[in-house]
Amino acid sequence: MIDKFGRTINYLRISVTDRCNLRCRYCMPHHGVKLLNHRDILSFEEIAEVAQAAMEMGITKIRLTGGEPLVRRGILKLVNTLGALKGLEDFAMTTNGILLSEHAQALADAGLMRVNVSLDTLHPDRYRQLTRFGEIDHALIGIEAAQKAGLGPVKLNCVIGKYSNRLDAQAVRQFGESKGIQVRLIRQMCFETGCFSVVQGGSGGDCNRCNRIRLSSDGKIRPCLFSDISFSVRKLGPEQAIQLAVAQKPAAGGVCTNNLMNRIGG
Image 1 (tube, rainbow, N blue to C red):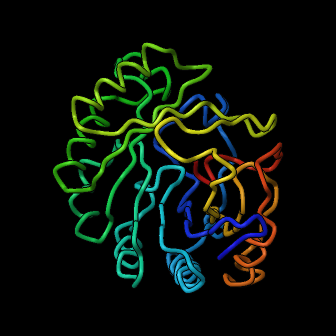
Image 2: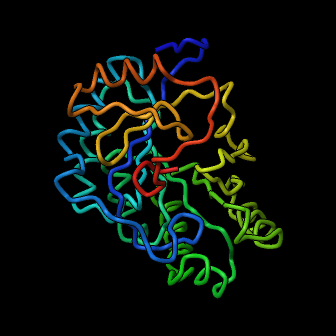
């Protein structure tokens, strides 16, 4: 698929849930967010239908996100279904790693190719503060399990901004280098102000090269993370929703008012 700016769209990010087992300060406000009713969240069958349609239209790369995708009950069933799709060249997941140690090998066996793990600090107290109650040892064990399972190249996503500092990012980068893991530094984003930047060590945030569309957990195809434009796959059907999203993909991200990170992923 080619959008009106000549960009090839071959990457679909799928948010499978708005739930998460952490409450990271840059993702969720202190009072939390209103969660979707279960009937409003796409079923695995609906997600698979969208993925199949997207691949028939030119998508070759799929990433599962959340919330936290590993808290979705039966997630291995979906991974197995998507992993079997013909023509899928890259199949990844973004996770906080807390549950990765118990699922890494099964994910690999089901067809997942690689993972990105969110890791913003190596200091246990700072990790607990940033995530509000997370234990960093669980994430580190998960990273090790992912490497052993062959879910590579494993990459680390490190958010830097209001709640992070230079020493945190430096420590995460050194840890990554010691483990042979690529570290991606991501500036803290703000939907209300349209604040985002190019990911250091990755391609996210580079609007001129953007090749992605997103499927939110409530069934909306979104052409841009920083846009209010969306099209319901339940109302329009997957193919038409995808076609409209690609046709209306903006040249660059801007201010948006109705996006929630826990519903559309990063």
